Image 1 (tube, rainbow, N blue to C red):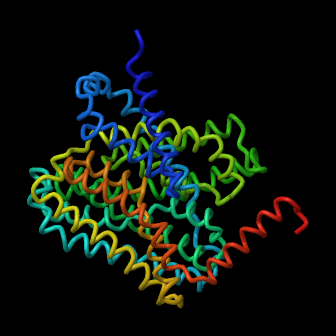
Image 2 (tube, one colour):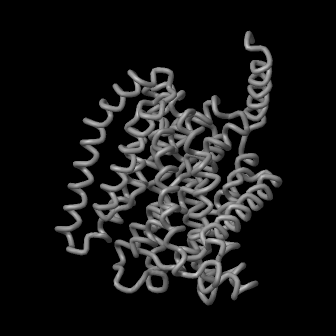
Image 3 (cartoon, one colour):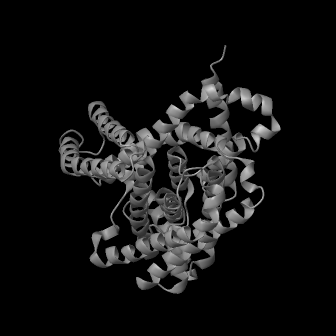
Length: 426
């Protein structure tokens, strides 16, 4: 008899790849199609079209193995995100200050709007027993996130990575995500601390101790290990095993602290040397397996947590509030920061549009919130739709706001890069 897990993997991976190809065909990041595949495999589409087969394929007792694989995929993905994290390019003080303006305002403005809409959402969307402020702070964190990996890929596809706009956006996204993850960790600690404020401070102290160990002990230890045994940036089997030990240990600690394993994975990735050769090597060995095989499982499980009830009654009004807070907060906050950094209005709005991309990072955030019990299935469904729509909007808004000379410069850079690949002497 065929293992349910193997059949589940066939259906999940095939659906995710087909949806990813369809979205790539219309000029959208494939990850949007893969996220949509989760909704398709959930009760609102697959479950409605073939309820008997859907119930048999994704029977609750068969989901524990999928859940473990999804957690592994999340841990590996967030590890790579931590390794990818970079300080604002060139390290110049002016560049860091400019990225700080954009990063901070693109977090604070959507956070404020997230709190502002929470009185209207809390009565209908918060699970029983969840107070207003934990719910409101989670909504603030959900509004504040930016998908750094997606933003980087959009800039690369449009040859904008080395432009001032592109470098400012990358540095700003790194700062914004760091702030948003800190806020999310505080919210999850508040929810997970069943013993009240004493439990909350215990979690915070544990997290502070872990950060101290990671950056004062593990960081120099692994830097020496990589410098001695992987000087070319390509770790061998033993070094790679040592990296996995550190990764899973940090993820286990944050899981034990009642936060989430993704926090430890991100911290460990962030503590490794900022070496592009190491990043390429780890991406080649880890990211493809995580993205192609494991993350679609996460999308499918997320889709199983969606519900059509989210759009009944006042649900569409709630979705409208969430979309307004998410889009206005990110675009206006990012644009205001870019203006303070000295960019023109059109380039500033282009930066704000890039900061509005949420994609997979938002899905991770809301799954953390669902697992922590701070939101229920209805809020999860609405926030998932928001994550997809805001990322779909990014490309068209960027094209709308980019100045013609910025696009011409990007095309010239793209041609020069292709010529350099053909003739390295250029």
